Image (cartoon, rainbow, N blue to C red; front, side, top):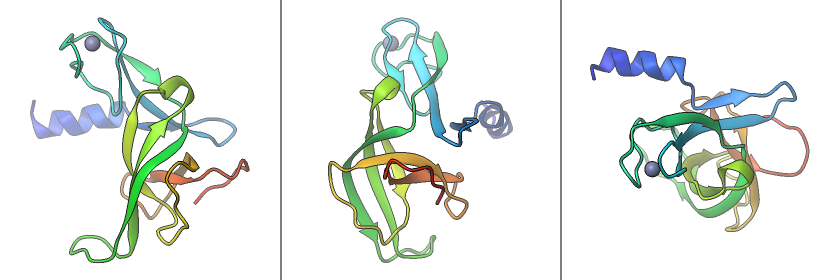
Length: 137
Ligand SMILES: [Zn+2]
């Protein structure tokens, strides 16, 4: 696949969508062969190799599996925080590698997090602490 086609496909199939209530929902795929979930969308299943994926909404809530704060970088302003989030609800079973906002947040393994719009992050979204309130980073 040519790079220009790949970029066009990404434009047509964004990784996130914003619901009317402001919630950010991750968009992935469900395998037509074995029902395995993936994020981001995959043309071929990572478990069985089947090439019959369907678009599926994975929700935007989860639990922080692990994280780190980066203080030295030649490419991004520092500090910034990265983490793995285990999705809950419809995305249960999917672990997402993501930026965490704010970078200086008090991150704890196991804490509840949710996807948010983050204009200062590449891709325009990240995960933040889930305080149970509507908020955007
Ligand atoms: Zn499969």
